[in-house]
Length: 445
Image (cartoon, rainbow, N blue to C red; front, side, top):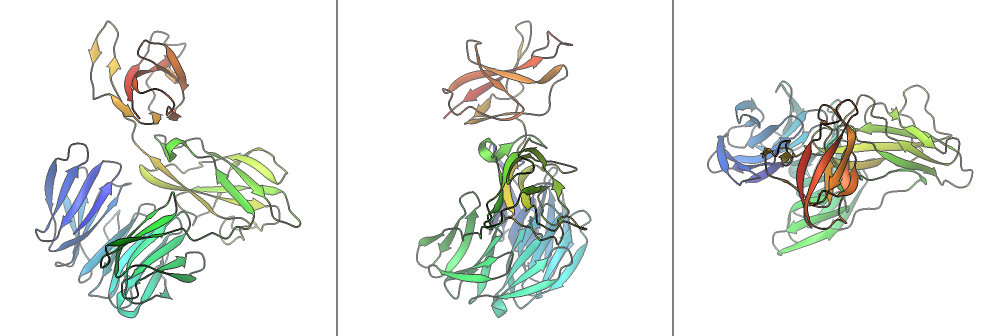
């Protein structure tokens, strides 16, 4: 009935409504096991930060919580006829719509304690924007969408078209998309203002997904055998903006990769200097840290380096946020909370993955295979788990042992290299001049 993926562990979870269990698929081998769930398991969601999987059981009015490491389970009681789930990995909260109880259950992922939020008749689809900490629920029974504040669970209603069912969020643009099956439309909600617009689609629209990189939305029209493609709604540009210099593949193995960017003020007339850029990881709902200004201080165009402060990337998908401040912006008292931002919020999706090791070539002609060679397609990731005696330097060697390129921790672009077998050699420190760790990689197209 439903499927979810944990991109960190490469496990896939399939809810089997008819057999009251969940099939767990190993993404590397396609081997499967089954884990018991409740009656009519109809929805599943994953928190990659905690490796917990949540299964809504419509027939037994509860949620099965699966420990992804052990496949052990815990049961949490929710409302009647739970229909959909959404997870906020930043706050570790899980949101369950209870169609039969006209409520939403909020599960605290740390304790499994629950809170109930009253909604309108027949709540169905639910989605979370972790950047803004807002939750969106389609109320089919009275043609509305509930906008819930994740801090205090306060509810604001937005009128929808006929029979809203599914909800999808683009956290980068702060746009929310609602499938209206009765009206053959998709409603677009501007997350900043809750203003709406309608886009006609096929009959009836049934499911939907968004690509945050391209900004396009794809709507499956069950009756017509078609898919409607919606281009991303434009964002109002106030001419004061900050932009990230993107990582290769938008991917890293590091908890705190070096992120840089630019900030400019192109506001006319009366353009002012740039005060700086605020940054935060995975949410914009807390106070901002100042990014470090690298050049251009006191002008209308600066370059900056991300200041991690106490933040770091979690495994899986992250949303790294920055906002530009120009010279006239009000920042007294609560910096970043309630202050008028002069520029557009920029949200950059970054994926943190584990560092995969390849073949270790040992001294004295001893070869030890710890796992298969690393397969590289375009980007070679050098982990931050440095071996004792090595520094931050490494080189890539070809099959003949010739140096090809210097490597740095994190992502390295190797897309221009010819396919074949290469070796990563970590350069030793002066204190350990004989220590050299070598790993085999296979570069493919």
